[in-house]
Length: 232
Image 1 (tube, helix red, strand yellow):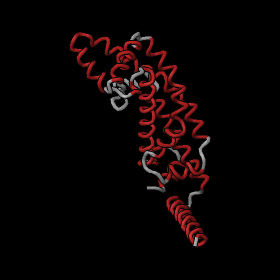
Image 2 (image 1 turned 135 degrees about the horizontal axis):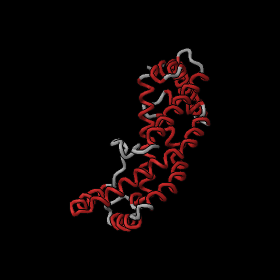
Image 3 (image 1 turned 90 degrees about the vertical axis):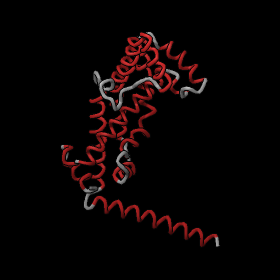
Image 4 (image 1 turned 45 degrees about the horizontal axis):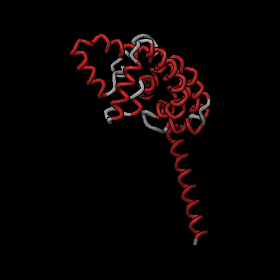
């Protein structure tokens, strides 16, 4: 009985594998695996470079409402009260500082993003091509979030300390977190800003990915047009 079950399980696994490969072949038509891999790598490289260029400059974060970093929930409410009490300038300085820190950090992650693209596997390429609109973003989050965080943190820490409000933020936010008013990861200014910087970077990579999927011809690459055009 166990042997029969084993054979049935093996058969189901083989059928699932064959179905996946068939779907992969249908989605790509006559496009080779080599072309598919090049197309995906080109999309990843283009999306990452565009995101870094958009964010890693003055007002890349501060001037973009989609990724602009504000103070976390409870502190944002407290900041509004402080502004009404004439402390608006200091609040604005802090918000400007944390966004400038993000803008300074992003370009330093370009090589990590490129390395992730260069080292991607055939399986990664297949998952991206047959995945949803954010599959490229998910790839980058999985492969690069940890090393990018390690790279960004010292830069963000140095930039925010220059404002002179870091210690006050950490002390105040730490108390707020102890009362459950803030998430623990929001109680340290450099850690909070680093996390938001990564969120903004991955969001913009996702925006670029969607543009390529929606309009492969506009990407300016024959490989991208051929591969992503076959999926439309």
